Length: 337
Image 1 (tube, rainbow, N blue to C red):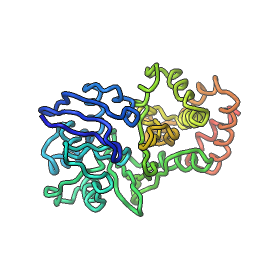
Image 2 (image 1 turned 90 degrees about the vertical axis):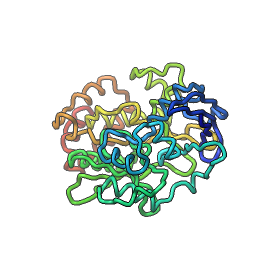
Image 3 (image 1 turned 60 degrees about the horizontal axis):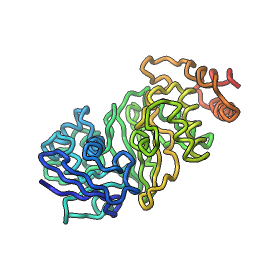
Image 4 (image 1 turned 120 degrees about the vertical axis):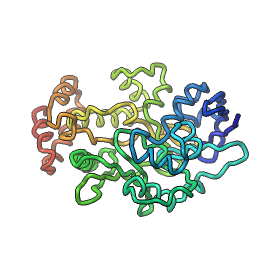
């Protein structure tokens, strides 16, 4: 049996034990600094959270990467051997007596070798690397990897040209109107890669709603419950959530599942700082599964719209006029003002 310590930044927040890749005990020490999903301290909840942090093994390149680096596809093993390191939050874990500060753990040159392996499939020098890869939190439908460029971390995704165009253009118009949205940029001439800048500041971590919902009395996935829960965090969070919901309706985004939105928390205090920005629109607009735009979501949303929704739609519609690619969304939006 191996004993581990879980850290948030460099603060010890829990202990756990592992036997044959099974979590046998989990003991919180700083519940205020833990994700809500695991703050009450059950081994099963911690195991689920840990598996979600492991490299997504649906991707061929990720499976090859794990064979090169570790020789295992067990998600608990993968998470532990990469110290649970992630760019999108501040948690790490080590066996007792083996702590390394998080800022020293991630060597960008080695991390970029891992990213190049995933993106280019040509790097054969990984076998002797012992890295804590930030790819440990790249679960999802598309091949993804973090790269360090220009003093910032960028999440690269390999996807269709339609998905990339939708994601970049939607991100641009949302930023244009001053709404909090992730920054996306095209990569390469064929536009089958996109990159987005890490939206976290120092000493902040992202917690998806799928985990954070356990903060509330009712953690169910009912839309009205989710709205009430987020609204209870304050008017700023409620207004940000309303803008995300409206944008999803305008851009026909049906993929806003509970890991595609969440909160930004302080790693020092555990406090909720703000709602995470609007991100992950690669199955929206003309990149939706049907490939055709429909205003059905917007029509349904506007049936219960309040004054703020109408004002938000006007602001967004005015900006959409300047984006030829998004003309279907513009034509739909002007019908509801």
